[in-house]
Amino acid sequence: MRAAAILGIGTSPDDLKRFETSTSSFQLGVPAEATGLDAIVIFGGDGTIHRHLSELVRLKLPVLVVPRGSGNDFARSLDIGNLVQAAAIWKLFAEGANNVRTVDLGVITRLSPITEQTRYFSCVAGVGLDTATARFANQLPRWLRGNGGYALSLPVALAGFTPPQVDLRVDGQPHSSVPRVLAAFANTPWYGGGMHIAPKADMTDGLLDACIIGAMSKAKLLRLFPSVYGGNHLKFKEVEYFQAEGFELATQTQVDVYADGEFVCQTPVAISAAKGALRMIVPG
Image (cartoon, rainbow, N blue to C red; front, side, top):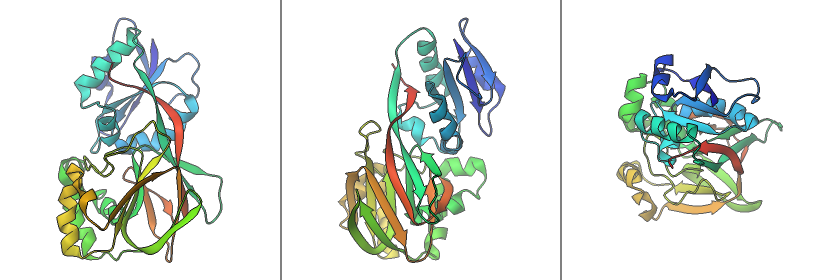
C-alpha cells in the first residue's frame, strides 16, 4: 500500500506516525500522476481540501480526509471526527477493507467574462452575508477561526451589509430576481465550522441543496443565525429551501462568490453538481 500525503497548514510529517503500518508507505506532496499509488491522505481543513480538489479529481485515487483545519465540515459530513478516527479508517483500508465511497462535488463556472475554467468545491458555495462573514473570519488567527471565528465575524459583517439583488435561474428556468441576504448552494449538510445550513443535503444524489434567505431586519437575522447550527432556520418564512442540478446567478453589481470559506470569483456564475467526482475513504 503506497499513498501520497498532503499536509495542510499547521500539520507536519509527525502526523503521519498514526497512519504508518507494516504494509503502507507514504510520499509527501501532491503527486504528478497516480501511477504506483493506491490512495491520497490529505491533512487539513476545508480550505486545504478546496485548494487541492482539481488535482484530487484528476488523479482519481481514493482520498482520506484527516480533519486538522479550522473548519472541518467536509470531514464531518463523511463522519470523520478527528485524527484518531481517521487513522482507524486508514488502517481498515490498508488491510483491504472496501471502505471507499463515491461522492459528488460542486462546480463553479464564471459566466462573464466567459471562461472554460471551473472551480470545484466540496461543501457549500454562495453569495451574500456568508461571503462577507467569511472574508472577515479569514483575517482572524487560525486558532480563533476554528473556535467560533465565523460567529464572531457575523456582527462585524452585518453592520455594513446590504442584501444584493440576485437574479436566479434554476435548472435553466427563471426563478426570481429579488434582494437576498444569502444564497447558498450546498453539497454537504454543514459549513462554516458546524453550521447545519442544508440538513437534507446528500453527497451522492447528483443535486445541490439551495438555501435562499430573503430580506429581513438585522435584528431578526441575528435571531435566525443561532438556529442554523441545529438546522432550525428552515422554519423561518424568509428561508426557501429546495434541490436542483444547477443554478445561474447574477447581481446588479458584481459581488464575491465564496466556496468552502475561500474566495473564488465574482458574479455572474453557474453553480452545478459534479456527480461521483471523488472516491473517498470512509468509516467502515
